[in-house]
Length: 128
Image (cartoon, rainbow, N blue to C red; front, side, top):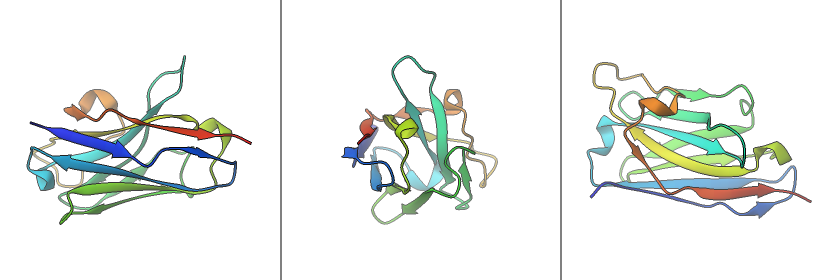
């Protein structure tokens, strides 16, 4: 069974840091791009960051560029999102997703409707 287990969320103060993890199983990890998406109550889902597991290319939303870093560990079949300098507007449920984009090793879009598998999400709350 395909599994994407997101973890690492919690409550942090503005300016603090969190590291989210996404553990993948049930599919050929190296064939899939992994994206992080977030959704706050009453707001649309937003692409945050993504990585191509074939090429290692990374992508970031403008709102998080310079603060967040995505990385992967192929041996552990895991993708991480290091979030620094957190702001209250970063508060959301964060989801990891896997997408098979067979023809392009560097392709990892920030459009959620292009992804195939989704995890359950982990809540990040940034508040004083």
